[in-house]
Length: 322
Image (tube, rainbow, N blue to C red; front, side, top):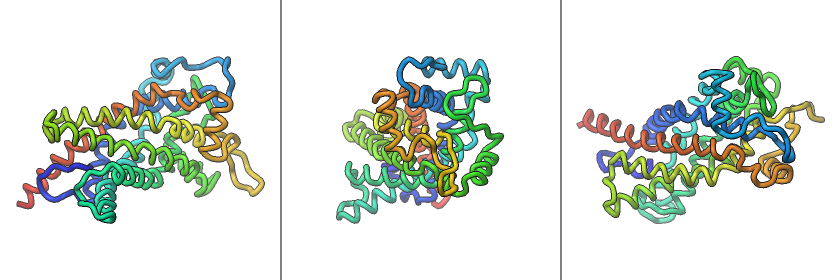
C-alpha cells in the first residue's frame, strides 16, 4: 500500500502482492452477491428502447428473486473465478502500486516517499492495467457465470459447470483470442478505477493523519479513507464497467475470417455509443445502486484489511529478523 507504517523496511513487490491478494479474497466473499445483481441489471433491456418489461426492478429485487429461485449458490455464482481474479487484480494493484509510484517519483526528481497526486494517479492506473490484463480470462468467465440464471435469464446465457469447464469451452470454441475478449474494456475499466482508488485512499488518510484528526494506524482511519475511495471509484468506473459486462457477455457468431466475433459490439467505445443511442446515457449507469453496494464494502474491506494485514505481517517479519 502507498503509505506503509514506519516500522521496518518497505514491502517488496511479492510481499505486497501476497497481502493484497489475501485482503481482496476476504472482500469478494462479502461483495459477490451485489456483483451478481449488478451484472444482471446491466444486461437487462440491453439495447432496448424504453417500455420493455423488466425482469428485475432494482438491486434488492435481483437479490431477493435470485435467493428465492437459486438459493445461496445463485447469489454466489462466479465466486471461484472471482477469488482468483481478485488475487491477481488486487495483488497486482496493491503490490505494484507502491514500487511504481516511488520509481516514477524518482524519475521526475522527487523523493520516493513524497505523496504527489499526479504520480499516484499514473501509478494507480498502470498497476490496475497490469492486474486487469493478467486477470482478464477470469473476469470473462466470472461475468458469464454471474449472468446465468436458469429461472429468470437476462441477456445472453452461458452455462458452465465450473471455471475449468468455462475456460476449456471458450478456448476450444474461440482459441486464445476468446480468452482475451474484452481486454481493452477491462484495461479501461480497471485503469479508471485504480487511478482514483489508491490515490483517493492515501490522500484521505494523509489528510486525516497530518491534521491529527485520526491516528495513523487506527482501523477508523482505514475505514474512513476507504469509504471515500469507494465513492470515487464507483462514480468514475460505472460506464466502463457496464461496457465490460456487455462486451464479455454478448453472443458470438463465426465471422468472414472463420473466427468468432461479437454480434452486438466491436469494442467498449462502440458499446457505450450504442447503449447511449438506444437507452440514453442512463443506460451507462444501469445497476449503479448494485455497483455501489458492491464497490463500497469491497473497497472498504480490501483497503482496511490490506493495511491491517501489512501491519501484522511487518510486525511478524521484523520481530522474526531482529
